[in-house]
Figure 1 (cartoon, rainbow, N blue to C red):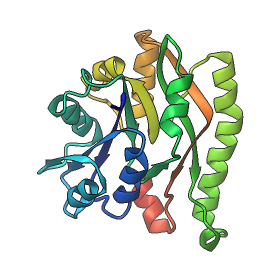
Figure 2 (cartoon, rainbow, N blue to C red; figure 1 turned 45 degrees about the vertical axis):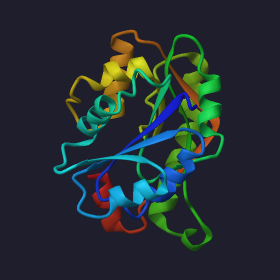
Figure 3 (cartoon, rainbow, N blue to C red; figure 1 turned 30 degrees about the vertical axis):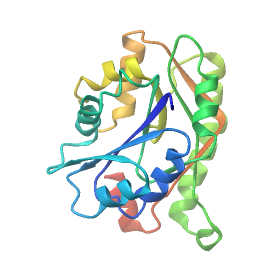
Length: 219
């Protein structure tokens, strides 16, 4: 029986959700909230191995995650809750590497995230820009912050929380757009625990290939 649940909120993510679920399901139990999707997100996620909750109308990511936590009673069933984006794929040992490195007093940990930058997109400027941003930030700032034990803004695409702490965080509405930044702030403000970065735990995200996709993702 897995001690980690992977929780994914997705709206119209049918193009990427299957691989995200498959890669996570080999190492954790996966729960997907289809948050008002008008495509086949729910069907594709279920076929890939996730337990799926469908919402008729979109209420946003924090609301979707909160609903799933309550519906599936995750806080009482798992030691860890991983929050993963619907276009993020985890290395086969990602959950094990992250959770083994979490020590007493850690509230949340996240691993490295890189761009899926294949040969066909080698010279795509949008992917190149994102890949450089990930590399430079994680090799310098995140590793330095982790070593010094200072505040680290974790990446919301691949974070693993202690279940009881995430259950507490998710009950409060996020007052601004970037939910993981708010959760980090609350962890520090409420002194809920340490924030850990695990550089050798790998995951990848599908970055936008065109200006239109980049704009939509950014907004």
